[in-house]
Image 1 (cartoon, rainbow, N blue to C red):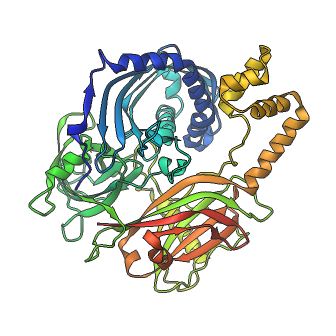
Image 2 (image 1 turned 30 degrees about the horizontal axis):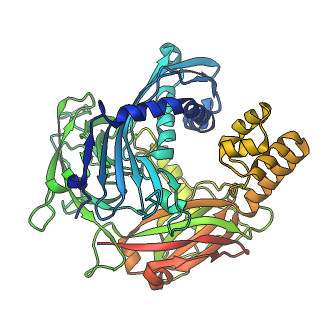
Image 3 (image 1 turned 180 degrees about the horizontal axis):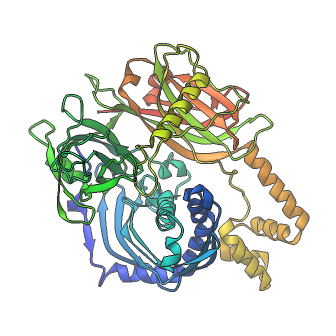
Length: 601
């Protein structure tokens, strides 16, 4: 059954006369701290993202010279509380609207550009669980946006902005990516309130999907004609882009057709989307491919609620098709329709019989905690790469410790949602040459192994220090400057006395400061932490052929610090389909973590 909310257990709370005013008062009290955090986020995350996304000639030219978020606070409400189906977790849905009076200045290629207003509106979800029988009665808190919030940015000096190609879209995309990277599903903010239970902060931050949405694109009807031809009527070269969460799928292009069909036999093309919350929505756009210019947006579907889509596609014990109307790029109706179908799949430990047919048959979770025993000559930060390969035998070359791994172009879409799958002719030739070179270096001659799935962690971070948390350091310094004792500071900040003493001691002695910095650097290399779960959908061929799982530890220069190949059968034979680490890599390094498999059914 598809994910649904339990309306009988839900409670609506009017924002005008109940809890929302109190919540807004709380936000006003917290706003000075929130502003400080967002200001740092602009400098540390958004500014580098803008520079990375700009054309090469402008890279590194954008700098935030002034950041003031104003005095207007976000407004919260309405609020809805309900119990999650199939669990006792409590889910709180809270509307958030932020119309700021900020004053932000950035310099782009020496030209000052101002941002005078940012508007944000979305639905924030807070999940309280798992349940406990003692205070605080739940073991953790998760906070996230099920869908990306609506974002609008207003610039000052529009003429100046227009002189810098792509700056408007790049700034908007960088801000949206910064938000998505923190708290848009599958990303979320998590707090572990019970260190004694089996659920840790990594499990809360990267939970398994609640299910899989199998979406099938079948046909388009009466699409907009965007191309003018020398002979004959106007036409288009349509393709479809579907997005749910962080996954975006792009269909093949059908040339010169306003009533396209997809799939060799007309049955359509299917794609599987992991779903982490029933509130997530499927977003669909239709583009007209152009050879010599950017592709034209010729159709947009209203955001599709998962439950409504599944209900529309449910027949008598079968999956039926439904038509999705399209709007034009200007929001006008009459841009044609798409014929689609959808099916809900659950994750189970027992493999279904007969085996499931389709683009995916299983879901693999790789929990990566930290690494130890790293050989010398490596530089942090590190990443862990997981690859799944399939074939008739294990005759495939692995990356030995000490070797350097060439980076590969994954062909992913950009953050603005514009598809990147239709490269120019030169780009296609370049990728083909690169792919040929890669195949020559990564596989032995005549190797039958095929790369089925791949994922990599974010950059590692040092092990959490037992000293004073970064957010409390400025407060500690201020209290010490007022003459407060270490005992009083520790009581006020809710920390141990030795943490305060250690921090103040380092602040007074520059030599100890340098020593602490060196110890942090050594710790970053000796025991890099990841605290992340990689999640992969495995294609159908994984169930019938020889399969290998490859774990590789790479340093900042993509130099391999250790590698391990595991037969897929080890996971299948593990208790509960969960293989516990540590995993010993060649070269002496070890990865702490686990691998867990679930079948789609």
